[in-house]
Amino acid sequence: MKKSLIVLAVAGLAAAGTAAAGSYTVRFGDRGPTAFIAVQDNDFRGWRDDGRRLGVDDRQSRIAQQIESGVRNGALTRREARLLGGQLAATENKERAFESDGRLSGRERTELHRDLDVVAQRLRFERHDSDRRY
Image 1 (cartoon, rainbow, N blue to C red):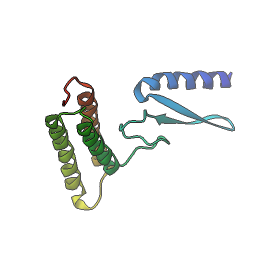
Image 2: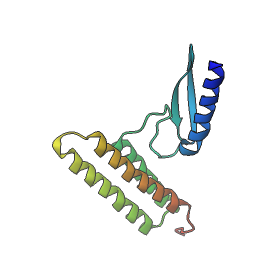
Image 3: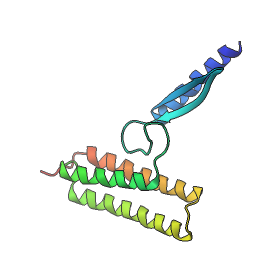
Image 4: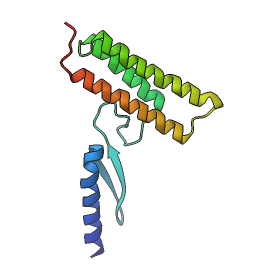
């Protein structure tokens, strides 16, 4: 009975979380499931392949590379790249301000990740819209 309930709970959690995180990997120990690890698609949403979150600097670097790549291959116009670069620079300035006391608190790190999520989402939108450089 316990095993059935655990299996149903795992299936329910996995089904509910799939929409939010893309997919989950379930680790099984001696006594059943022990951990759920969020696995994101292989883009710049901020997750490593092993399910851990990238650092703020790593995400900023990835987004900057994606912007440069988008300009080179024509997926982004210069104007779109300039606006995205400005948003990214604002996030970097905010990070510097947060680090002025010598460390980055959890709340500050969360806020920076939220800002980077907004920039990354905007970048995905701009790369896939119909504006092209010819």
